[in-house]
Amino acid sequence: YQDLMNLEVGDSAQVYAAFLVYLNLTEVRGWEDVVGVACPELEAVLLEGREKTGELVQVVYPLPAHRTVSHKDLRCVLDRGSPMLLCAVASDSTLVYQRLCDGLLTPDPPVDIQDQGRRQHRKRRLRT
Image (cartoon, rainbow, N blue to C red; front, side, top):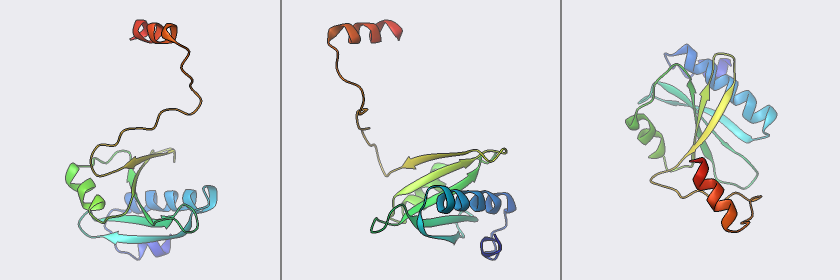
């Protein structure tokens, strides 16, 4: 926590959010080489680390849930060239991760769902 505070980012709530995300990434999710990096443009602490050995470094932007984020803020992080995760940190320490990318990305189809023919599609149309 002191290492993150020493980055001298003015927003103590954002630094605390970064600390909670740091603990989650290192202790729960098993990420490696996680370090805090100051981002003067955002006046925020970003976290950089690897999900698994040998993978690309990813940038995580911890954001207290009460704060707003603009397109300019996200562009600032995306322009670093690394894959990005936005992590919303609620007041009860709940963490919600959202992967962000530059541009539109078509999602992969769910793995467990199989096409059961026309009947499934008809039901899906009726629900909407």
